[in-house]
Amino acid sequence: MFCNFFRAQRLEEASKLSSWKQWRQSTQRTLRRLRDEAQEWLSSLKLWRADIHQIEGMFGTGILSYFSFLRFLVMLNLIIFLLMFSFVMLPIIIAPKLSIISSSTESNCSKYPSSARRGLVIFHEHITDLLSGGGFLEQTYLFYGFYQVNQIHFPNIKYNLALAYLMTTIAYLFLSLIWIVKRSALGFKRNLVQDEDRFQSFCNKIFAGWDFCITNENAASLKRSSLLYELRTDLEEERIKQKIADRTRKEKCRIYLIRFILNIFVIGVLAGCFYSIYVATIFSQEAQLLNIKVNFIVDLMYEYLPSIVITLANFITPLLFSVIINFEDYSPAFEIRFTLMRCVFMRLTSIGVLLFSLWSQITHCKDETCICGYNHELYSCWETRVGQEMYKLTVFDFIIIVAVTIFVEFPRKLIVRHCDCGLAKWWGQQEFSIPQNVLEIVYGQTICWIGTFYCPMLPAICTIKYFFIFYIKKVSLLKNCRPATRPFRASSSNFFFLAVLLIGLALACLPVSVSVAQINCSQACGPFVGYNTSWEVLPTAVSELPTGVRSVIEALSSEAFAVSFFVVTCLAMFYVIALAGAHKKVINQLREQLVLVSLALSIATFLNSKTEKITSIQCYVVAVHYV
Image (cartoon, rainbow, N blue to C red; front, side, top):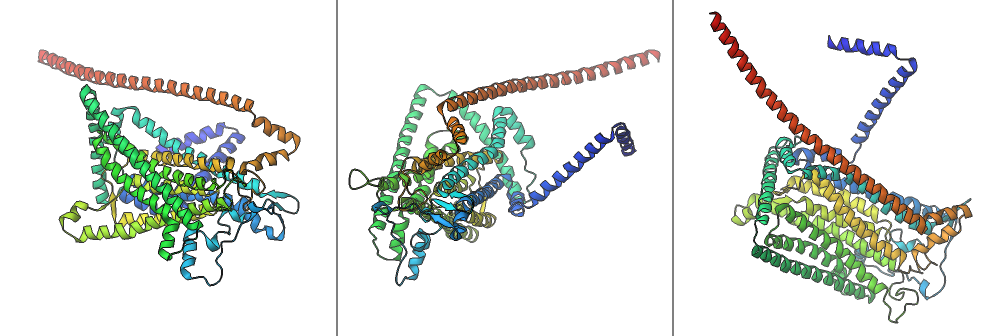
């Protein structure tokens, strides 16, 4: 009946519209339906859709966020590889049929000896080359030194490979920044809403905290424990805040003294780790340059010594930091964040120390001044040497992840399941720690961003690496692990992951920018032969443009435009901040009105109940009177 009424009402409204408006409305409905169907079809094509739904159903959205983040990195690296392949590798692949102009010149700086092994090559030497990026792999598409091409002549145009190489590097870093910021915006808004009001946070946990995607009984029990833990944590934070407010001056001095001593100890540990990385890198480089050969295992250890030291430092320091934080008397939430930030600093800064160690060797010559601007006697193509170090870090990181899963997590699960001793029960089942797993892949992604300039095929390697890591982590999660007893909140996980990834991107931009703009590029290899620095190719290309285009680019790169742009950006930022403040005031007013409305409704309900009682009493009195 109601359906017929609404249908008749719609037909009556449609009859009043003109034929043009009716056609436009029907077209809009058809396009909207097609758009929804296309979005549904595209979502069905997402990578690992069924696997991620399975993980979500068994373990909830907290662990789901890690695997979604891993899928995001796979897609990001694939896009970066397609950029490098399309603008750097593909022109050279199709170039042999065309004329290639090489700008190499005959001088001491332009000599690049081949590293390919000659004569009878033993099998294990091929394994060493495959793991180190040397030998037969050094002068291939894998590394910077292979692209010794300045311009490529196509039938009608000249392709400036040096300019394309530089602009592609800038493009993939800028694309990564935009994509990460766009994805992190939603998580940042959710964090602001959740942290705005403590009472609202309690209400959200109690009335809307359950994850209805969970279908597994054990996962449901863990989710219930998780909610209880979060409530206890919030109450503990309130208790600690009250405890901090009630501290005496003597207690404050004692706590600050303990924290100062422990932070000095942490700084000492970090300094020791960084110095060990520096010494290991110098020793490894000298052993390779002197061509010291002992046997297969020792030679491989010489090659991977910096990677081994970095991995040991990344393994030991988090355990040490988790013990130290217990004596600093912070709130539980701040303990987790502070420990993680220390681990992030350790992991990412270790890459910077490795690069600093390499560049100290590259830019240091026996004489006071380097003839070529770098140590060409030891590093005829220093960009390829840096690319090999990034390649080794990537390979070794993957080997460690696989080895830990096979030789640590699987045996631990078997021991805990089949051994009834007290030590096995105390050890317990392996926890799937989301933050530590995220730090692993952020560390690997930072290496990828830095190394792509020196090793253009590295994004493809990282894509394959993360593809296999997904299945390794999935099998380990389903077979070996359980969610952490201190879970990371699903609502803030994605924002935390992307925030750490932004830190890694910022760190990656720094060494790439220094090597492009400050360090002399190799004169024996690569597309920038003939330039002092890689950046010089850009002003050279601009100077060859028509006068009008060149004047526009020069105006855009001038100080006047930079200052104007900065002022406009500041005004826009101030406007957005003022608008956000106004919206915040409106929200607070609406909250106050809601409180007043709820109070008025409760008073009205109370008065209505009283009025009904009085009316019933009056009716009863009147009835008694008549009787």
